[in-house]
Image (cartoon, rainbow, N blue to C red; front, top):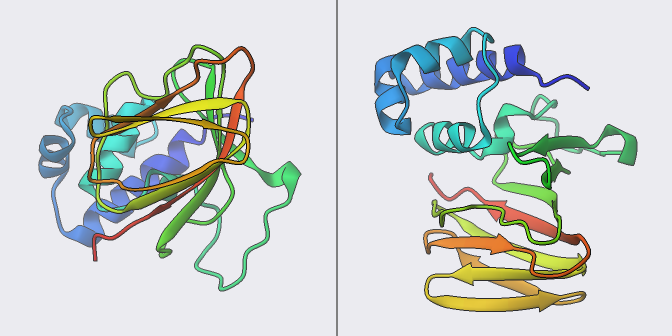
Length: 185
């Protein structure tokens, strides 16, 4: 499956225009150059996950809104073979989109983190709330100054505005089901 850079660029341009902001303003908000925004919107480059994350926050959407393949349907069913995998620059962390994002208040996905990998090198924070349930392995979740070790069957809930990150200290992949709200309205 090829990275959908043209479709992602089209969606970013559409969302930017709906907000009534220029590409220069979006670039400033996201901490990238205007040239980078232009190249992304025209589908000429494949942006990093960090750049997509910054663009999503600047546009007040979840990052998965760039990948959603539905058009606001009221019921969506995702079959295992239809799962969209969004990989980080490092290939050992994957986000598997399990729900639509555009026009929705919650994003639902499967998080797979290989042993020794950190999902975010630096802590992140954004509007909304998150909760996760560990299916396999061990996942360390740092929220603010607290550190939580989660194993199979453990769950966590936290305010996403608190600085957070996760990593896998174990010897096998950590797999978790995760949900995030988008409380920017």
